[in-house]
Amino acid sequence: MTIPFDLPTFAIAAAVVGAAYIIFGISAFGASLFTVPMLSYFYPLDFVLPLCVLLDVAAALSLGMRFSRESDKSELMWMVPSCLIGAVLGVTLLVNLPRPATIAGCGVFLLAYGIYSLRQAGAVKMVSRGWAPVAGLAGGVFGTLFGIGAPPYAIYLTHRLADKLALRATLSNMVIFSVSIRALVFTAGGLMLADRLVGFAMLVPFALAGLWYGNRIHRRISRDSVLRLVSALLLLIGASLLVRVFAG
Image (spheres, rainbow, N blue to C red):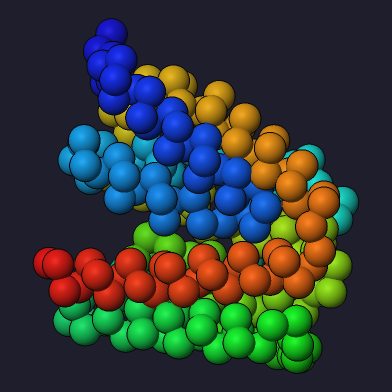
C-alpha cells in the first residue's frame, strides 16, 4: 500500500486540515478554501480535490447527523431538488461557457456580497422562502462549475434562520448533499484511487478534531459573530476565485 505523505508533509497537511475544520465546525463550510490551495503546493489537483471532498463529506456528515434535530427540514425540502437540477445544469454550462469569465463573475459577486454583508454588521433582513429554489439551483451550479456549492446556501439561510444552531445544521445538511454529488462524480471519473483513500484515512482524525474544537467555539459565540465569519468566508472565496483567474 502506497503512503502518499512523507513525515514533514504529513505534519503540514495535518495542521492545515485541523485548522481548516475548526472553521467548518463554526460555519459548516469553508474548509476547502484553505485545504485545497495549501495541499496543492505539494500534490496535483487530481489528488487534492478528491481527498478534500472526502474530508468535507466526513465533516458534513458528522455535523449533519449530530445536529440533525436542529436543521430546518422545510428549507431542505425546498432547496435539495433545485440543487440537483443546478448540478446537472452546471455540467452543461461547464462545457459551453467561457470559464475564466464565468469564474471572474462569480468571484466579483461573492466579493461584493461579502463586503456588503460585513458592512451591514448584525442588521440581517429576512427574505421569503421563494428564494430557496434559487439558492438551491445556484448552489448546484456553483458546485459543478467551481467546486464550491455552499456560498449560495449560506447567503440564503443567513437571511432565513435566526437561530445559529439551526443555521449551521441546515447548511451542513445542504453541504452533505452538494459534496456527495461531487464525490460520486470523482468516483465515476476514476479519481478515487487508493492513495486518495489512504490520505483521507490519515487526515480525517485531524479534520474531526478541528470540527470538535470549532463546535466548542460555536457554542460560545453569538449569531452575529457567526454571520461575520460567514461573510468573511464569502469574501475570501470571491477573492480566491479572482486570484485563480488572473493567475491562470
